[in-house]
Length: 533
Image (cartoon, rainbow, N blue to C red):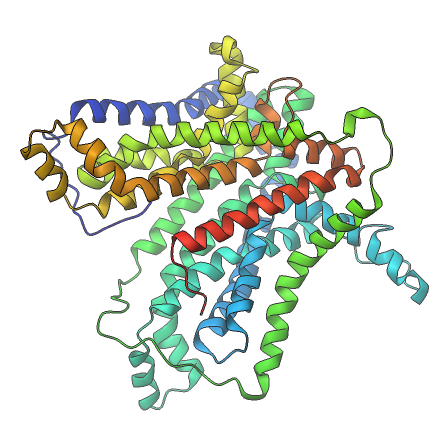
């Protein structure tokens, strides 16, 4: 959750009642699916719950997920931090282009990367066939833990890269110069001066990586690796809800543990002023290592980008084998994706508006709790959220089950923080004197909001809505669990085609997703004024 310099006041007497009620209703709606999930899991019975939770298979799933999260997070830090340092603090050639290239893997859904890597490096894959004339009959195993860790790392390290790069760009280099005058070497100056100042940014990026690795469903499923998300989905679709609910609660507990550890680390971090009176220019010469650094940047980004794009273009050129109309791509799948994503963006914007307003303009413990509640859905994996809404729909809201309303509700709960964060930042930039002046001229509170505040926050409002739209387009597990019968989107068509082994039929929808994701990156960078120089 974003923070600012405003203090939290316990007094809530001046809170606008209608907005407070609306914010409370949104917070309750976000938390409701998890409440029903807990209740369903408790119906299993204590003895059965203990037996299921402690059986060897469950322990193995926990250890698998823990190993995946730790490996991916450490690897992302080891990749993202050096790349960020190279593109900010050195005389690396082509820095602008390399920065964009290193960031681009973030726009590729990991499940698209996973089936592309399977097609390229799996048994009898494209790469193995290419090497066959040289006598190479078998490549290292891509399935299982190695493949899952590799793919998730390649498509999550940009989180660490982007957050670390932002911190390095605001770093006061006079402190580093002072350390050098005290006869510290470059490594010692980095360890004693630079690292403490960028540690909060590295921690923030690592949190995003860890949560993504824990919640990712498509990659473990495609790589046939038994992580929490894959086992939960298999248990629910094959054996019913009891074990799936218990595993879901364990996954939620692990998610909350990660959030607690990050909060503890962040709470122990010193605060630094960044650009206050300091100098941020100057670069370190790489000398003979200059082009080795360029090659390292291109190797990482090239592996993450060229493999899926190359495989998809190859499939597109070859065309898919005839398997009947079931796997034929239809334009209506793209229309369906755009329609539900637009609906989710609209509802999330309207639902997040009162929460963002109170969080920015009336900082109390109550409004802070409302805002924190909206982040629960974002922290909970999509497969768990989808499962919770399945329980809720089948048990208490049957008219809504298997309808677009429940599907859009899942998207809103999942991605509401993206809208809230963007709008909250916009509200903070509005001078309180402007709407107050409008009220002094006879406008009602709503009239002042509509005439003065709304035009000023419009960029943030539209930016948050666009972010919800774009992330909804790529959401896989919640869509699989909650979509109405016969309703197909880009991601469900990709999943159906890859599950059946007809990868060629996934090429067109996957390329459409990549195009939309690439557009999202350009929109985000342009709106935030992200400088890649």
